[in-house]
Image (cartoon, rainbow, N blue to C red; front, side, top):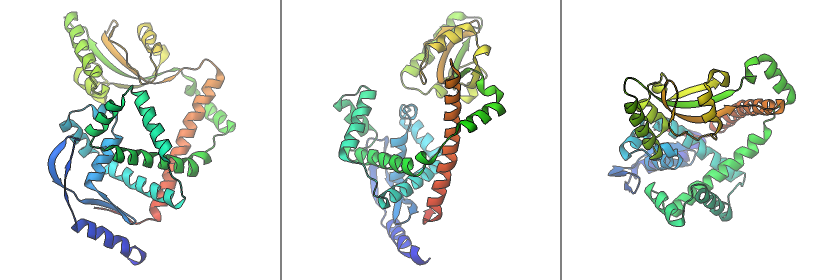
Length: 319
């Protein structure tokens, strides 16, 4: 074991000294036995830390689920979350070595930005983090870790990724359909059937669920009659030329991530969510979109290679 013997001793000690805790406010009211689920160099990851991280990283759609449904989602994705948390630990350890940190002013500004974005008062914010099982001190610690990780990734990966004009032009030559204009959308469609009033009532019910915080995918699977229902309403990329004028008119008034109110087409009652758009009024806009696409792919490869390098020089044990 050599140089890792000290790390292993720490991990074994932490396994023996398990403790009882109550996951206050996070929907896990039952008492559970905490345990070490992974060792990352000289640090351990406990079950409670893993689930607290999942609460912190959860999307608004997941946070809106009932306690039981949210636990189910977390359980199904536990292994993937653990891998991400291990990577985060390695990044934070590397950041400490590189003396990359986050000041109190940065953390407070991030909190103020979150409040402004969601139109939250101080009281609303404190209630929200308490519901997720965090004290303000714990929440600030998680934000600090995010800021520190982002800074190091920017230094070690993001700034080193470059996309040249030649790469953009070569891509456009190889991919003639890259210039196709259209949208990435999700859809809830309730077909007219024999009773139009029933279709209107059903789409209204679906819309109320969405306004109440239910995920679009969940609502689509339950209410939609479209073939995309099994995929949570995901239609993928749809060429603008293949869409009806009614749908294009609705989508044109949406921003990325927004959903429409229920509207009529010949097929039935619809709700559309705009996931992304590829609409270019100028050649420069097309090239900018291609550059972003190429950059994203190159960044992904560079990030994975960097993480792989961190893991190859670290002691990682998953239990």
